[in-house]
Amino acid sequence: MPAVHRRTVLKGAAAATGLTLLPATASAARVRLTREEHRVIVIGSGFGGGVTALRLAQAGVPVTVLERGIRWPTGPNAETFPHPTSPDKRIFWLGSELNLLGLVSLPFEPYTGLLERVPGVGMDIMCAAGVGGGSLVYQGMTLQPAEAVFNANLSEQLDYARMDRVYYPRVARMLRVETAPDELIASPTYHAARVFRRNAERAGFPVEKIPMPIDWSYALRELKGEMKPSYTNGDCAFGVNNGGKHSVDVTYLAAAEATGRCTVVPQHNVTSVALGPDGRWQVFADRIATDGTVLEKKILTTQALVMAAGTAGTTRLLMRAQAHGTIPDLPDGLGTGWGSNGDQIYTWTSLAEDFGSPQGGPVIYGSLEWDDPARANTVIQASLPPLPDLRTTMLVGYGVSQGRGTFVYDSLKDDAVLHWPPTADLPVATRIAERINAIGGAAAVKLNTTSLVPSTWHPLGGASMNVVCDLAGRVRGHRGLYVLDGALMPGNTAACNPSMTIAAVAERALDEIVVRDVGTVF
Image 1 (cartoon, rainbow, N blue to C red):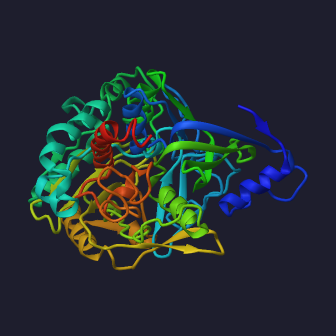
Image 2 (tube, rainbow, N blue to C red; image 1 turned 120 degrees about the vertical axis):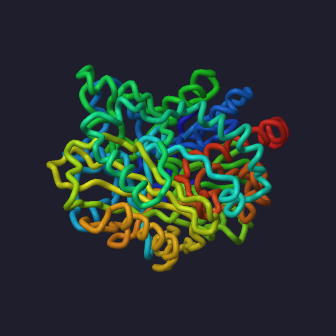
Image 3 (tube, rainbow, N blue to C red; image 1 turned 90 degrees about the horizontal axis):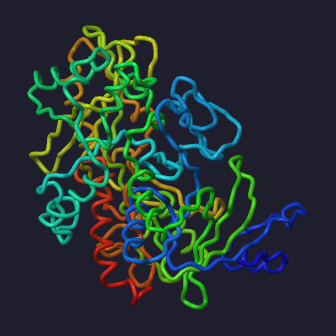
Protein backbone atom coordinates (compact mmCIF):
# COMPACT_ATOMS: atom_id res chain seq x y z
CA MET A 1 0.00 0.00 0.00
CA PRO A 2 1.55 3.38 -1.00
CA ALA A 3 2.78 5.84 1.59
CA VAL A 4 1.94 9.53 1.12
CA HIS A 5 4.45 12.06 2.42
CA ARG A 6 2.97 15.41 1.39
CA ARG A 7 2.17 17.82 4.18
CA THR A 8 -0.88 19.00 2.27
CA VAL A 9 -2.40 15.54 2.50
CA LEU A 10 -1.78 15.51 6.24
CA LYS A 11 -3.50 18.87 6.58
CA GLY A 12 -6.42 17.54 4.55
CA ALA A 13 -6.73 14.50 6.77
CA ALA A 14 -6.77 16.75 9.81
CA ALA A 15 -9.47 18.92 8.31
CA ALA A 16 -11.59 15.88 7.47
CA THR A 17 -11.71 14.82 11.10
CA GLY A 18 -11.71 18.20 12.76
CA LEU A 19 -8.60 17.11 14.67
CA THR A 20 -4.98 18.14 14.43
CA LEU A 21 -3.20 15.03 13.25
CA LEU A 22 0.26 16.62 13.14
CA PRO A 23 1.83 19.40 15.21
CA ALA A 24 3.47 22.13 13.17
CA THR A 25 7.02 20.91 13.72
CA ALA A 26 9.68 19.72 11.35
CA SER A 27 9.99 16.36 13.10
CA ALA A 28 6.23 15.79 12.93
CA ALA A 29 6.32 16.42 9.19
CA ARG A 30 8.43 13.32 8.78
CA VAL A 31 5.79 11.00 10.24
CA ARG A 32 4.48 8.91 7.37
CA LEU A 33 0.82 8.93 6.40
CA THR A 34 -0.53 5.70 4.93
CA ARG A 35 -3.91 4.94 3.40
CA GLU A 36 -5.41 1.47 3.50
CA GLU A 37 -8.67 -0.15 2.42
CA HIS A 38 -10.37 -3.01 4.26
CA ARG A 39 -13.60 -4.96 4.03
CA VAL A 40 -14.35 -4.79 7.78
CA ILE A 41 -12.54 -2.96 10.55
CA VAL A 42 -13.15 -3.77 14.21
CA ILE A 43 -11.89 -1.24 16.76
CA GLY A 44 -11.03 -3.11 19.94
CA SER A 45 -10.16 -6.71 20.73
CA GLY A 46 -12.17 -7.52 23.84
CA PHE A 47 -15.26 -9.70 24.05
CA GLY A 48 -17.32 -7.88 21.43
CA GLY A 49 -14.39 -7.48 19.07
CA GLY A 50 -13.28 -11.07 19.51
CA VAL A 51 -16.72 -12.50 18.79
CA THR A 52 -17.10 -10.25 15.74
CA ALA A 53 -13.70 -11.19 14.34
CA LEU A 54 -14.26 -14.92 14.66
CA ARG A 55 -17.79 -15.13 13.31
CA LEU A 56 -17.14 -12.87 10.32
CA ALA A 57 -13.90 -14.69 9.49
CA GLN A 58 -15.73 -18.02 9.67
CA ALA A 59 -18.31 -16.58 7.26
CA GLY A 60 -15.52 -15.86 4.77
CA VAL A 61 -15.23 -12.13 5.45
CA PRO A 62 -11.73 -10.67 5.86
CA VAL A 63 -11.50 -8.70 9.12
CA THR A 64 -8.92 -6.28 10.48
CA VAL A 65 -8.91 -5.77 14.26
CA LEU A 66 -7.26 -2.58 15.52
CA GLU A 67 -5.98 -2.75 19.11
CA ARG A 68 -4.26 0.15 20.81
CA GLY A 69 -2.33 -2.05 23.24
CA ILE A 70 0.21 -4.83 22.87
CA ARG A 71 0.07 -8.61 22.93
CA TRP A 72 0.63 -10.25 26.32
CA PRO A 73 1.75 -13.86 25.66
CA THR A 74 1.67 -16.21 28.64
CA GLY A 75 2.87 -19.66 29.54
CA PRO A 76 4.23 -21.61 32.50
CA ASN A 77 6.52 -19.36 34.56
CA ALA A 78 6.21 -16.43 32.13
CA GLU A 79 6.85 -12.90 33.34
CA THR A 80 4.71 -11.07 30.79
CA PHE A 81 2.32 -9.39 33.22
CA PRO A 82 3.32 -7.05 36.06
CA HIS A 83 3.05 -8.12 39.68
CA PRO A 84 0.73 -6.17 42.04
CA THR A 85 3.35 -6.24 44.79
CA SER A 86 6.02 -4.71 42.55
CA PRO A 87 4.17 -2.38 40.15
CA ASP A 88 5.98 -1.07 37.12
CA LYS A 89 5.23 0.73 33.85
CA ARG A 90 3.41 -2.29 32.43
CA ILE A 91 0.36 -1.54 34.59
CA PHE A 92 -0.45 1.86 33.15
CA TRP A 93 -1.66 2.99 29.76
CA LEU A 94 0.04 6.04 28.25
CA GLY A 95 -0.86 9.19 30.11
CA SER A 96 -3.21 7.49 32.54
CA GLU A 97 -3.58 9.06 35.97
CA LEU A 98 -4.05 5.68 37.59
CA ASN A 99 -3.34 5.53 41.30
CA LEU A 100 -4.07 3.30 44.25
CA LEU A 101 -7.28 4.21 46.11
CA GLY A 102 -6.86 7.81 45.00
CA LEU A 103 -4.11 8.26 47.55
CA VAL A 104 -0.78 7.03 46.22
CA SER A 105 0.27 8.01 42.72
CA LEU A 106 2.63 5.67 40.94
CA PRO A 107 4.48 7.60 38.23
CA PHE A 108 6.31 5.52 35.66
CA GLU A 109 7.76 6.19 32.26
CA PRO A 110 5.15 6.10 29.46
CA TYR A 111 4.22 2.62 28.29
CA THR A 112 1.39 0.89 26.46
CA GLY A 113 0.35 -0.80 29.68
CA LEU A 114 -2.72 -2.72 30.76
CA LEU A 115 -4.96 -0.18 32.47
CA GLU A 116 -6.23 3.31 31.87
CA ARG A 117 -8.19 5.38 34.33
CA VAL A 118 -10.64 7.59 32.43
CA PRO A 119 -11.62 10.44 34.78
CA GLY A 120 -15.24 11.48 35.01
CA VAL A 121 -17.30 13.87 37.10
CA GLY A 122 -18.45 11.76 40.04
CA MET A 123 -17.17 8.42 38.66
CA ASP A 124 -14.01 7.19 36.99
CA ILE A 125 -13.89 4.32 34.50
CA MET A 126 -11.20 1.65 34.53
CA CYS A 127 -10.35 0.53 30.99
CA ALA A 128 -8.08 -2.23 29.73
CA ALA A 129 -5.62 -2.11 26.84
CA GLY A 130 -4.03 -5.02 25.03
CA VAL A 131 -4.94 -7.82 22.64
CA GLY A 132 -7.81 -9.48 24.47
CA GLY A 133 -9.12 -6.29 26.05
CA GLY A 134 -10.67 -6.54 29.48
CA SER A 135 -10.37 -10.33 29.48
CA LEU A 136 -6.66 -9.92 30.24
CA VAL A 137 -7.22 -8.40 33.67
CA TYR A 138 -10.76 -9.37 34.65
CA GLN A 139 -11.14 -11.86 37.46
CA GLY A 140 -13.05 -14.14 35.10
CA MET A 141 -16.47 -14.56 36.69
CA THR A 142 -18.58 -15.95 33.85
CA LEU A 143 -22.16 -15.71 35.07
CA GLN A 144 -25.38 -16.09 33.10
CA PRO A 145 -28.29 -13.99 34.43
CA ALA A 146 -31.50 -15.57 35.66
CA GLU A 147 -34.43 -15.18 33.27
CA ALA A 148 -36.53 -12.87 35.44
CA VAL A 149 -33.60 -10.55 36.18
CA PHE A 150 -32.55 -10.58 32.51
CA ASN A 151 -36.02 -9.65 31.28
CA ALA A 152 -36.35 -6.90 33.89
CA ASN A 153 -33.15 -5.20 32.80
CA LEU A 154 -32.43 -6.11 29.19
CA SER A 155 -34.71 -6.17 26.19
CA GLU A 156 -37.11 -9.09 26.24
CA GLN A 157 -36.82 -9.01 22.44
CA LEU A 158 -33.40 -10.60 22.88
CA ASP A 159 -35.43 -13.73 23.73
CA TYR A 160 -33.97 -15.20 26.90
CA ALA A 161 -35.05 -18.73 25.97
CA ARG A 162 -32.91 -18.57 22.84
CA MET A 163 -30.05 -16.86 24.65
CA ASP A 164 -30.17 -19.64 27.24
CA ARG A 165 -30.36 -22.39 24.64
CA VAL A 166 -27.87 -21.09 22.07
CA TYR A 167 -25.72 -18.11 22.93
CA TYR A 168 -24.77 -18.38 26.59
CA PRO A 169 -23.74 -22.03 26.09
CA ARG A 170 -21.77 -21.04 22.99
CA VAL A 171 -19.78 -18.50 25.01
CA ALA A 172 -19.24 -20.99 27.82
CA ARG A 173 -17.81 -23.50 25.33
CA MET A 174 -15.51 -20.94 23.74
CA LEU A 175 -14.17 -19.81 27.10
CA ARG A 176 -14.09 -23.37 28.48
CA VAL A 177 -15.49 -22.31 31.83
CA GLU A 178 -15.01 -24.52 34.88
CA THR A 179 -15.50 -24.24 38.61
CA ALA A 180 -12.60 -24.79 40.97
CA PRO A 181 -11.99 -28.41 42.07
CA ASP A 182 -12.53 -29.32 45.73
CA GLU A 183 -8.92 -30.49 45.97
CA LEU A 184 -7.76 -26.95 45.27
CA ILE A 185 -10.29 -25.30 47.59
CA ALA A 186 -9.16 -27.53 50.46
CA SER A 187 -5.56 -26.36 50.13
CA PRO A 188 -4.10 -23.93 52.73
CA THR A 189 -4.01 -20.82 50.55
CA TYR A 190 -7.76 -20.96 49.88
CA HIS A 191 -8.69 -20.54 53.55
CA ALA A 192 -10.26 -17.11 52.85
CA ALA A 193 -12.60 -18.66 50.27
CA ARG A 194 -13.70 -21.29 52.78
CA VAL A 195 -14.33 -18.64 55.46
CA PHE A 196 -16.42 -16.62 53.01
CA ARG A 197 -18.57 -19.64 52.20
CA ARG A 198 -19.03 -20.52 55.86
CA ASN A 199 -19.93 -16.99 56.93
CA ALA A 200 -22.28 -16.37 54.02
CA GLU A 201 -24.17 -19.59 54.71
CA ARG A 202 -24.35 -18.76 58.42
CA ALA A 203 -25.88 -15.40 57.44
CA GLY A 204 -28.54 -17.25 55.46
CA PHE A 205 -27.25 -16.41 52.00
CA PRO A 206 -26.93 -18.91 49.15
CA VAL A 207 -23.38 -19.77 48.06
CA GLU A 208 -22.14 -21.48 44.92
CA LYS A 209 -18.97 -21.96 42.95
CA ILE A 210 -18.43 -19.34 40.27
CA PRO A 211 -17.72 -20.58 36.71
CA MET A 212 -14.38 -19.26 35.51
CA PRO A 213 -12.56 -19.38 32.14
CA ILE A 214 -9.64 -21.20 33.75
CA ASP A 215 -7.95 -24.55 33.40
CA TRP A 216 -7.66 -25.21 37.12
CA SER A 217 -5.09 -27.93 36.52
CA TYR A 218 -2.57 -25.11 36.29
CA ALA A 219 -3.35 -24.13 39.88
CA LEU A 220 -3.11 -27.76 40.99
CA ARG A 221 0.29 -28.00 39.33
CA GLU A 222 1.37 -24.95 41.29
CA LEU A 223 0.48 -26.76 44.50
CA LYS A 224 2.69 -29.64 43.40
CA GLY A 225 5.61 -27.29 42.79
CA GLU A 226 5.54 -27.84 39.03
CA MET A 227 4.96 -24.14 38.28
CA LYS A 228 5.82 -20.85 39.88
CA PRO A 229 2.71 -19.64 41.72
CA SER A 230 0.32 -17.31 39.94
CA TYR A 231 -3.15 -18.56 40.89
CA THR A 232 -2.48 -20.09 44.29
CA ASN A 233 -0.82 -16.98 45.73
CA GLY A 234 -3.29 -14.45 44.25
CA ASP A 235 -0.65 -12.98 41.95
CA CYS A 236 -3.10 -12.59 39.07
CA ALA A 237 -4.78 -9.21 39.52
CA PHE A 238 -2.96 -7.77 36.50
CA GLY A 239 -3.02 -10.87 34.32
CA VAL A 240 -2.14 -14.53 34.81
CA ASN A 241 1.45 -15.20 33.83
CA ASN A 242 1.28 -19.00 33.99
CA GLY A 243 -1.35 -19.38 31.29
CA GLY A 244 -4.41 -21.54 31.64
CA LYS A 245 -6.70 -18.50 31.55
CA HIS A 246 -8.98 -18.64 28.52
CA SER A 247 -8.96 -14.94 27.73
CA VAL A 248 -10.22 -13.57 24.41
CA ASP A 249 -6.75 -13.47 22.84
CA VAL A 250 -6.24 -17.24 23.20
CA THR A 251 -9.84 -18.23 22.40
CA TYR A 252 -11.90 -16.09 20.04
CA LEU A 253 -9.04 -14.13 18.48
CA ALA A 254 -6.73 -17.12 18.12
CA ALA A 255 -9.52 -19.03 16.37
CA ALA A 256 -10.24 -16.03 14.13
CA GLU A 257 -6.58 -15.69 13.14
CA ALA A 258 -6.39 -19.43 12.45
CA THR A 259 -8.97 -19.00 9.65
CA GLY A 260 -6.46 -16.91 7.71
CA ARG A 261 -9.08 -14.16 7.28
CA CYS A 262 -8.47 -12.15 10.44
CA THR A 263 -5.56 -9.80 11.06
CA VAL A 264 -5.08 -8.41 14.56
CA VAL A 265 -2.99 -5.24 14.50
CA PRO A 266 -1.66 -4.16 17.92
CA GLN A 267 -0.36 -0.70 18.83
CA HIS A 268 -2.86 1.11 16.61
CA ASN A 269 -4.47 3.90 18.61
CA VAL A 270 -7.65 5.15 16.94
CA THR A 271 -8.05 8.92 17.28
CA SER A 272 -11.24 9.49 15.28
CA VAL A 273 -13.82 7.97 12.96
CA ALA A 274 -15.75 9.54 10.10
CA LEU A 275 -18.23 8.87 7.34
CA GLY A 276 -16.36 9.35 4.07
CA PRO A 277 -17.76 11.24 1.07
CA ASP A 278 -18.24 7.93 -0.78
CA GLY A 279 -20.40 6.49 2.01
CA ARG A 280 -17.67 4.28 3.39
CA TRP A 281 -16.22 4.59 6.86
CA GLN A 282 -12.88 6.17 7.67
CA VAL A 283 -10.75 5.33 10.68
CA PHE A 284 -7.85 7.59 11.67
CA ALA A 285 -5.25 5.74 13.72
CA ASP A 286 -1.73 6.25 15.00
CA ARG A 287 0.67 3.33 14.90
CA ILE A 288 2.62 3.85 18.08
CA ALA A 289 5.73 2.60 19.84
CA THR A 290 5.40 1.26 23.38
CA ASP A 291 6.37 4.68 24.75
CA GLY A 292 3.58 6.35 22.77
CA THR A 293 5.75 7.79 20.01
CA VAL A 294 3.73 8.05 16.80
CA LEU A 295 5.52 5.99 14.16
CA GLU A 296 2.94 6.27 11.41
CA LYS A 297 -0.44 7.85 10.81
CA LYS A 298 -3.07 5.86 8.97
CA ILE A 299 -6.35 6.58 7.25
CA LEU A 300 -8.19 3.29 6.85
CA THR A 301 -11.31 3.06 4.73
CA THR A 302 -13.81 0.27 5.23
CA GLN A 303 -17.25 -0.87 4.13
CA ALA A 304 -18.24 -1.91 7.65
CA LEU A 305 -17.00 -0.45 10.93
CA VAL A 306 -17.55 -2.24 14.23
CA MET A 307 -17.02 -0.17 17.36
CA ALA A 308 -15.80 -2.52 20.09
CA ALA A 309 -13.39 -0.22 21.93
CA GLY A 310 -15.15 -0.61 25.27
CA THR A 311 -17.82 1.61 26.74
CA ALA A 312 -15.57 4.63 27.22
CA GLY A 313 -13.65 4.22 23.98
CA THR A 314 -16.64 3.62 21.73
CA THR A 315 -18.85 6.31 23.24
CA ARG A 316 -16.13 8.96 23.23
CA LEU A 317 -15.10 8.27 19.63
CA LEU A 318 -18.70 8.48 18.42
CA MET A 319 -19.45 11.61 20.43
CA ARG A 320 -16.31 13.29 19.10
CA ALA A 321 -17.46 12.43 15.57
CA GLN A 322 -20.87 13.85 16.42
CA ALA A 323 -19.38 17.09 17.77
CA HIS A 324 -17.09 17.56 14.75
CA GLY A 325 -19.82 16.62 12.28
CA THR A 326 -17.71 13.83 10.78
CA ILE A 327 -20.61 11.42 11.31
CA PRO A 328 -23.84 13.38 10.81
CA ASP A 329 -27.20 12.55 12.34
CA LEU A 330 -26.07 10.16 15.05
CA PRO A 331 -28.98 9.20 17.32
CA ASP A 332 -29.92 11.71 20.01
CA GLY A 333 -29.48 9.17 22.81
CA LEU A 334 -25.75 8.80 22.23
CA GLY A 335 -23.87 9.22 25.52
CA THR A 336 -26.90 8.55 27.72
CA GLY A 337 -27.99 5.51 29.73
CA TRP A 338 -24.56 4.81 31.23
CA GLY A 339 -24.35 2.61 34.33
CA SER A 340 -21.66 1.29 36.66
CA ASN A 341 -23.22 -2.18 37.08
CA GLY A 342 -23.49 -1.27 40.76
CA ASP A 343 -19.81 -2.02 41.47
CA GLN A 344 -18.82 -1.98 45.14
CA ILE A 345 -15.31 -3.11 46.19
CA TYR A 346 -14.61 -3.75 49.88
CA THR A 347 -11.70 -4.78 52.01
CA TRP A 348 -12.66 -7.19 54.81
CA THR A 349 -10.32 -7.11 57.81
CA SER A 350 -11.25 -9.68 60.43
CA LEU A 351 -10.32 -9.59 64.10
CA ALA A 352 -11.77 -13.06 64.58
CA GLU A 353 -10.33 -14.82 61.54
CA ASP A 354 -6.85 -14.97 60.09
CA PHE A 355 -7.28 -15.29 56.32
CA GLY A 356 -3.60 -16.03 55.94
CA SER A 357 -1.13 -15.08 53.27
CA PRO A 358 -0.79 -15.77 50.42
CA GLN A 359 -4.41 -16.15 49.37
CA GLY A 360 -5.35 -18.31 46.40
CA GLY A 361 -7.28 -16.74 43.59
CA PRO A 362 -8.79 -15.41 41.57
CA VAL A 363 -12.43 -16.20 42.60
CA ILE A 364 -13.95 -19.41 43.97
CA TYR A 365 -17.33 -18.68 45.59
CA GLY A 366 -20.12 -16.17 45.20
CA SER A 367 -23.46 -15.45 46.78
CA LEU A 368 -26.20 -14.78 44.22
CA GLU A 369 -29.24 -12.97 45.62
CA TRP A 370 -31.36 -12.95 42.49
CA ASP A 371 -34.89 -13.77 43.66
CA ASP A 372 -36.07 -10.15 43.40
CA PRO A 373 -35.21 -8.67 39.97
CA ALA A 374 -35.49 -5.13 41.37
CA ARG A 375 -32.65 -5.58 43.85
CA ALA A 376 -30.75 -8.58 42.49
CA ASN A 377 -27.08 -8.53 43.43
CA THR A 378 -23.99 -10.72 43.62
CA VAL A 379 -21.26 -10.75 46.28
CA ILE A 380 -18.00 -12.61 45.78
CA GLN A 381 -14.72 -13.05 47.65
CA ALA A 382 -11.50 -12.27 45.79
CA SER A 383 -7.93 -12.80 46.87
CA LEU A 384 -5.42 -10.16 47.85
CA PRO A 385 -2.05 -10.14 46.09
CA PRO A 386 0.80 -11.94 47.95
CA LEU A 387 1.27 -9.35 50.71
CA PRO A 388 2.27 -9.84 54.36
CA ASP A 389 -0.55 -11.27 56.48
CA LEU A 390 -2.92 -8.34 57.02
CA ARG A 391 -5.88 -10.44 58.21
CA THR A 392 -7.63 -8.93 55.19
CA THR A 393 -9.27 -10.15 52.01
CA MET A 394 -11.51 -8.62 49.32
CA LEU A 395 -15.28 -8.68 48.91
CA VAL A 396 -16.84 -7.40 45.70
CA GLY A 397 -20.51 -6.73 45.02
CA TYR A 398 -22.43 -5.62 41.96
CA GLY A 399 -26.04 -5.71 40.92
CA VAL A 400 -29.13 -4.12 39.46
CA SER A 401 -29.18 -0.35 39.58
CA GLN A 402 -31.42 2.11 37.82
CA GLY A 403 -28.92 4.92 38.34
CA ARG A 404 -27.62 6.38 35.09
CA GLY A 405 -24.95 8.81 34.04
CA THR A 406 -24.42 10.81 30.85
CA PHE A 407 -21.39 11.61 28.74
CA VAL A 408 -21.13 15.33 27.96
CA TYR A 409 -18.89 16.61 25.18
CA ASP A 410 -16.31 19.13 26.40
CA SER A 411 -15.07 21.26 23.50
CA LEU A 412 -11.99 22.45 25.42
CA LYS A 413 -10.86 18.86 25.98
CA ASP A 414 -12.25 17.65 22.66
CA ASP A 415 -13.59 14.71 24.59
CA ALA A 416 -16.79 13.35 26.07
CA VAL A 417 -16.69 13.28 29.87
CA LEU A 418 -18.89 11.07 32.05
CA HIS A 419 -21.15 12.87 34.53
CA TRP A 420 -22.42 10.63 37.33
CA PRO A 421 -24.91 11.52 40.10
CA PRO A 422 -23.35 10.72 43.51
CA THR A 423 -26.32 8.71 44.80
CA ALA A 424 -27.17 6.93 41.55
CA ASP A 425 -26.27 3.46 42.89
CA LEU A 426 -27.48 4.05 46.45
CA PRO A 427 -30.20 1.33 46.60
CA VAL A 428 -27.97 -1.50 45.36
CA ALA A 429 -24.99 -0.17 47.30
CA THR A 430 -27.07 -0.21 50.49
CA ARG A 431 -28.18 -3.79 49.96
CA ILE A 432 -24.64 -4.95 49.14
CA ALA A 433 -23.40 -3.20 52.29
CA GLU A 434 -26.02 -5.03 54.37
CA ARG A 435 -24.96 -8.36 52.96
CA ILE A 436 -21.24 -7.70 53.35
CA ASN A 437 -21.72 -6.58 56.94
CA ALA A 438 -23.63 -9.79 57.65
CA ILE A 439 -20.96 -11.94 56.01
CA GLY A 440 -18.09 -10.10 57.68
CA GLY A 441 -19.56 -10.25 61.13
CA ALA A 442 -19.27 -7.86 64.05
CA ALA A 443 -15.58 -8.51 64.75
CA ALA A 444 -14.48 -7.09 61.42
CA VAL A 445 -13.79 -3.85 59.61
CA LYS A 446 -15.34 -3.53 56.15
CA LEU A 447 -14.09 -0.64 54.03
CA ASN A 448 -15.93 0.33 50.86
CA THR A 449 -13.16 1.63 48.62
CA THR A 450 -15.72 2.62 45.97
CA SER A 451 -17.22 5.17 48.34
CA LEU A 452 -13.77 6.71 48.86
CA VAL A 453 -12.83 6.82 45.18
CA PRO A 454 -15.89 6.23 42.96
CA SER A 455 -14.86 4.05 40.03
CA THR A 456 -16.03 1.01 38.13
CA TRP A 457 -14.43 -1.88 36.28
CA HIS A 458 -17.80 -2.74 34.69
CA PRO A 459 -18.82 0.32 32.64
CA LEU A 460 -21.96 -0.18 30.55
CA GLY A 461 -23.97 1.92 28.13
CA GLY A 462 -23.50 5.10 26.14
CA ALA A 463 -24.69 3.66 22.83
CA SER A 464 -27.43 1.45 24.23
CA MET A 465 -29.65 -1.02 22.44
CA ASN A 466 -33.12 0.27 21.58
CA VAL A 467 -31.83 3.84 21.95
CA VAL A 468 -28.78 4.28 19.71
CA CYS A 469 -28.60 0.81 18.16
CA ASP A 470 -30.87 -2.08 17.36
CA LEU A 471 -30.39 -5.40 19.13
CA ALA A 472 -27.75 -6.46 16.61
CA GLY A 473 -25.69 -3.36 17.33
CA ARG A 474 -26.55 -1.50 14.11
CA VAL A 475 -26.34 2.24 14.73
CA ARG A 476 -29.69 3.65 13.71
CA GLY A 477 -29.64 5.55 10.45
CA HIS A 478 -26.08 4.51 9.55
CA ARG A 479 -25.56 1.63 7.17
CA GLY A 480 -22.47 -0.42 8.00
CA LEU A 481 -21.81 1.09 11.45
CA TYR A 482 -22.12 -1.20 14.47
CA VAL A 483 -21.57 -1.10 18.24
CA LEU A 484 -20.78 -4.49 19.76
CA ASP A 485 -19.29 -4.03 23.21
CA GLY A 486 -20.32 -2.83 26.68
CA ALA A 487 -21.57 0.46 25.23
CA LEU A 488 -24.50 -1.50 23.74
CA MET A 489 -25.67 -2.70 27.17
CA PRO A 490 -28.48 -0.70 28.84
CA GLY A 491 -26.56 0.33 31.96
CA ASN A 492 -26.40 -3.03 33.73
CA THR A 493 -26.21 -6.74 32.95
CA ALA A 494 -28.75 -8.18 35.36
CA ALA A 495 -26.66 -8.64 38.52
CA CYS A 496 -23.80 -10.32 36.66
CA ASN A 497 -20.39 -9.07 35.71
CA PRO A 498 -20.79 -8.07 32.07
CA SER A 499 -18.39 -10.26 30.10
CA MET A 500 -20.61 -13.25 29.40
CA THR A 501 -23.65 -11.19 28.43
CA ILE A 502 -21.61 -8.86 26.19
CA ALA A 503 -20.21 -11.92 24.41
CA ALA A 504 -23.59 -13.69 24.19
CA VAL A 505 -25.34 -10.60 22.79
CA ALA A 506 -22.50 -10.24 20.28
CA GLU A 507 -22.87 -13.90 19.28
CA ARG A 508 -26.57 -13.34 18.69
CA ALA A 509 -25.87 -10.18 16.72
CA LEU A 510 -23.28 -11.86 14.49
CA ASP A 511 -25.68 -14.67 13.61
CA GLU A 512 -28.06 -12.00 12.30
CA ILE A 513 -25.37 -9.87 10.66
CA VAL A 514 -23.87 -12.82 8.80
CA VAL A 515 -27.27 -13.77 7.38
CA ARG A 516 -28.66 -10.31 6.63
CA ASP A 517 -25.76 -7.88 6.21
CA VAL A 518 -22.83 -9.79 4.72
CA GLY A 519 -23.04 -9.44 0.95
CA THR A 520 -25.69 -6.73 1.11
CA VAL A 521 -24.63 -4.01 3.55
CA PHE A 522 -20.97 -4.94 3.11
